[in-house]
Length: 640
Image 1 (cartoon, one colour):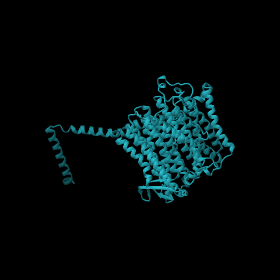
Image 2: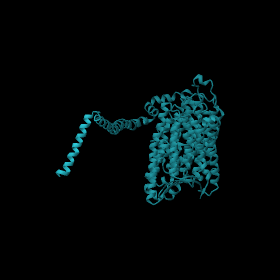
Image 3: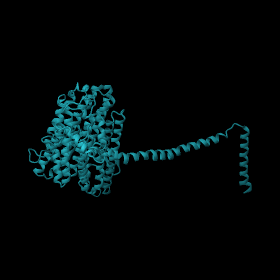
Image 4: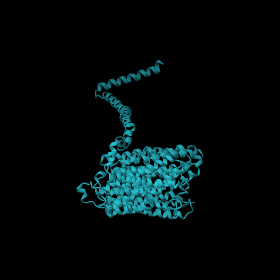
């Protein structure tokens, strides 16, 4: 059952209204007005999302709300509406985007309080939120692509926000270009779907219409799914297109929180889940999704273990956690993947905002080697960040335990023991590197510069209140998906079951022995971090010395950036400089244009010499012309 519900249009329109206000009235209205309007419109969008959810749950199971604004594209039998759809999956995403997004906007009021470009910052932040809402509310692939490109644009604008720094501007361009590679695959995937349906006489790109005509997609399902997944690897920073995300840390910290927790990097996971009916037609493509997710999770976790920049640890952590979500989707547990997306939004936003509070108090310092001992001077930040660390580690009863446990259970039950083992090991590595961060930042002797240590304290209330709210969500946010048989059980899976295919709740549950393993491994990771960085701080140095090659490999991030630079970037720059610039542009295009101009110029110079002003020359030319005409007349009339 689908019911028309016009307030859906308000959900993206409210942040877009904030964009217009900040863009055109931000300077005139002043900082205070922008600080109220920019977070306020996102908060109102959250309220409308809750209203929409209340209307949705009043419908029969599997129902949806819809709002069609206007017919956008009409070409023969093919037409596309600018339409929005609100079902169970959309509801979860809208609540995450607007709820967590609103908290990040409130936090930004304090974090960006002294930045002169506050109006431009909130313009981009509101546009980022609006673009993500268009993406998740889209009723069809074309509208989704509008939001898809919107978040790509906003990520570039926000990563390169402080564009006067050449490195920051370069990293913004890097994110934009890498995502264009993935977006090319996304577009080709859309074209493949349209072609497949058109061959069967069906002209639709709505999700409901495509799912009802799934049989027509079968011959092209694998190709379409793999092309779409290429787009997902760009947006969600998975192998091989993950390289932009660690360098995106140069933007303001609230930007990092929004990208990692509520917007861009979750887009790929949402798209794969939304198109679950397509991916389930292509088991080979689902296997690729699962393998890429598992390998990315492990790969990024190993790199995070040796990073020294607090935000880069969290960046690689996000790549790893998104890998878990892709693993869940790849084994058919789409609801488990979305469940982890939701809980991850809580604790990853909290981790980044806590890191931002630390960086804010340390005047921009991000190296953990110059921190330490902050627990006493920043108790609220310490306690909330510790809560987030326990949640991401998967320690029960924190939120991350329930969602990560569901993914690992589904992986094992679906017949992928190797991927399950990779996931379990990665869980241990996650606990290790995140508690390494906690210990180096908050415990031990202070390594903070004396000039900075003198004024250390918790951030103001406008920044700490969002931390406390997110900490509460990091504790209790996972209780909506308890293990089967406990209280309300898998309520989250049941809510999503009519939308995702197949629902994760239908997968078998492994034995208690495996469940105990999945609890024990993170605890071992935490204990290892305590031993290595609190009790025996010299041990990591000794291990790094004994395993120099491995340590160098991890510190250089497996030399992937260097490999891309050598294999892709430098050859392309050479082709651009010597073949296209000097050859095609210089020799061919400029040669034709300049050659034509020079030819005309030289011809004009020759003609100019005939205009000498000498009357005798003109008379001679006149006489020659007359004789020529006379000769022609005699030839045609008299001789012939």
